[in-house]
Length: 246
Image 1 (cartoon, rainbow, N blue to C red):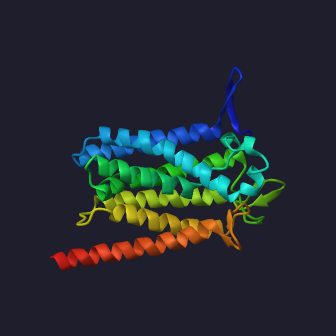
Image 2: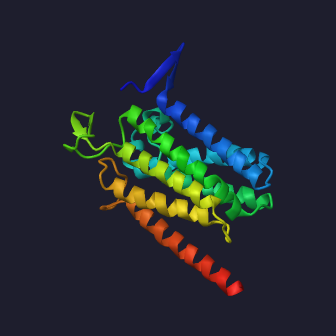
Image 3: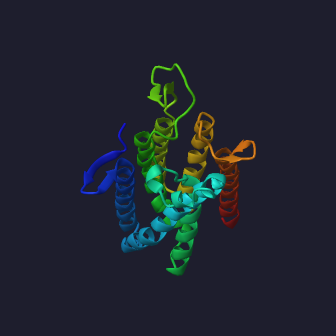
């Protein structure tokens, strides 16, 4: 699979970049419409994206480079070479959420309400972005004889990028359904996103051959467990507080 979609003179346009741009544009559009529906100035969504998206991108790359530092310390010129792949979603989420929190607080908006608005956009963007791994022939799994295996790197393997993309799409639909229900507490859509995505990522990560490691543990699985525990705790606490206030 050729990772280059087309060329404009000396400039190579890669599928990875096209898919990431599509994910960002579509996610922004959906959040823009939802903000307007909730009587929040939709221009705030554009401002949020302008600030958070670049920082999330930097966070995704920095996270990956840190975990692969033995290699990048010997090849520093490769650090900015994102066209070779190497963006970690957990790094993007950490930096993006932090940037979003600071922006929203400065604008005097409700962080949890804004988080609920953008959560479906984030997971849809992840579902689309995972196909960039397909074109880059990365983020694949162990060899398998299952009928849907894909031929990658000399063997038929688990298409883990596809597993995660389909899971993310399912989470997106669940979030849309849940958001339409009458909610008494802002933040539940975002917490549900974080928990469901982490659950799927934990399972899929166990099939991958290129996991970033924390000692003998897969970093993504460790972080996923922490996120699931934290979101469940926050969900319970916020629900309990609501009942007490009543």
